[in-house]
Length: 451
Image (cartoon, rainbow, N blue to C red):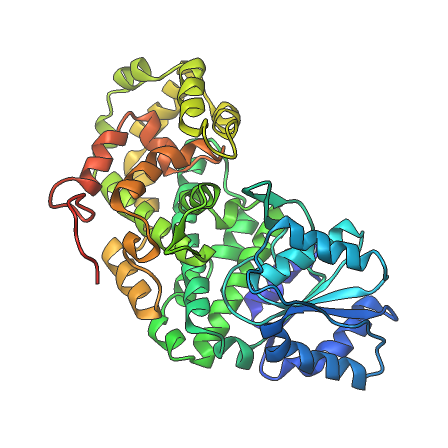
């Protein structure tokens, strides 16, 4: 285990141990006995993850003499993180005091996390792919009543990640994890903005857990696609660290910014690509690209010459924003979310003037911090291409018109302050969208075939 992981474990509020290495499934029985004593175990998996790792874990536990229930294996080919599947598992766990061992990736982990919490018990996780940062995160992302929601529930008490299993996972899952890790770059930029404008100060502990070593963990996309062990280790460490930071802060702020709002909105609007759901990581890949494109134009803008009076004069009342939010989401599964979240972060004209004065008077310093944090659009696009992730919106079935519209709608669905709120408050939304989607710009709206 690296020094970074050791330090992060000390800050974790729920996870007590994390083992990353080769051939580490053999350590599962010892870890189970250490943290769960003489409790009964029950493996939770789907048909694929049981074959990949579940059967081996079952055999190791059996050999060690640990009592086990019959493995709970989801066999629905359309399994996803939806509440009806949580209910299936939760009802099963009610009939036993066994501790669940979630053997799988995002879906299995989130279903087990929430079902275990509903039964007032902890659980253990065995990762089968470096596909997302939710393994060690507080909370489970579950679709409930048609909308993706985050349910408060604790992270696993113990987590195990075998490099041999992770590196042999489908390449698209690894690419998804790489994209989710890359999102920490733009998420960090958004937090810098919030910090500088006195909206939400940076928590040094959470920042350090996620950001220290982040660029190194993202440095080998081609090696990841080639199933390189060291690149895989760095990726899974980075993803686990993101979860630890969320545990520490009891918030997704350290690992999630405007790029995730794009993903959340597309989920809420039931976006699919050729009838198929798009993975979280692949949604976030395009979200991160979009926010990176926006940041490049924001950094080139002379905010030190901002006309504050003009911005304050143009600032809408909460009543006006409420009407706009209601209109945006009136025919969706979540008609009130825009009003709720916008009201939570609304500022009056005096507060707006104060924020914009800070922006204008400190722009060189703010710009410098952002430049040190961000990676260029061109470099990001190239790395996504190398790792096997989508690098154009059309790759996940998002038209350029829909993407442009997402820039406008996404900031309504979360109260978190991001670069989207910056362009709203400076009355520059149309200006920057024209920079991104205008004629001869990177996402020119004219019809175009994408290879």
